[in-house]
Length: 369
Image (cartoon, rainbow, N blue to C red; front, side):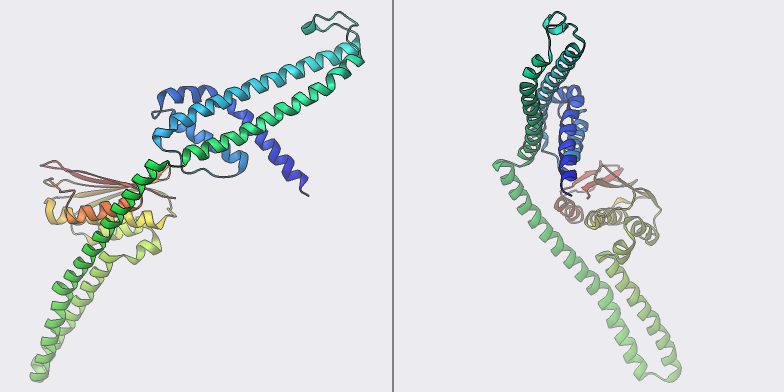
């Protein structure tokens, strides 16, 4: 029961390693052109080939500054594989010619052997060394398959300097996220204090007036109180929506953005070209980028229209919000810096382009699994 998987794994290892020589020309070109094309494509092809050999997906490539070293070593290993395959083919050709010569009594051109010189005894003398050399050649291919995986792991692993930079970045991002959360809490408190709380106070005053009024006036005050209750509910829904819209978790990013568009009085053009996204954290970050950018455009940009574009592919989710307002948006402002921290926490990038006179474009690119 175990022989078949072992044989299959050995064949996949040898076949996948030998197939690497087909990538040799592209790998040599990629070593020179790194980090430009075709280096990213060759790197993806190498990861796919290694995954086919051992069944382990390699979704995180090495850093850009390590790519050239990885590709150079890969090219060297592929050259060695090419030499091994050439030796194997040469050995097979010699063996076939010797077998034919022994069976027919003909000559062997490679050895300049005359007809009848190669006998079955001569073939027997070459069989054992030939099999040993074939075993060593196949073992060499297996060793190179192991080396290729080790090389990928070595170059993918960050060094001490990169780890130190990452620790600093994570500390900075954590501080920024904490500040963003505190700012969001203060905003919610202001919304409740200035909106809901004031309406509740007004409602309590109305109810107190109802107690002191005659029935006719009391009926009118109760209708006003009922309307005020509806206003309070609307304010609470707005606060809850800005905190975290339920449909984002339930229905996904596209539906939540359509609901955001419908809640805005200004014309909002929505252009979504993205399939289902399994990474909810990336969707959440993208939604709040769009929501904050739309809020800023309404409050500060004096814009007539807004366009939201969403794209996904190659493990990235991008969302951009463009308005035709007066420009001059401050990327260091409370709102934009908050969503920048949210995007950075997902190892993404936020770009703000807002020249005076407009237009303003806020774009976030977020890795998604």
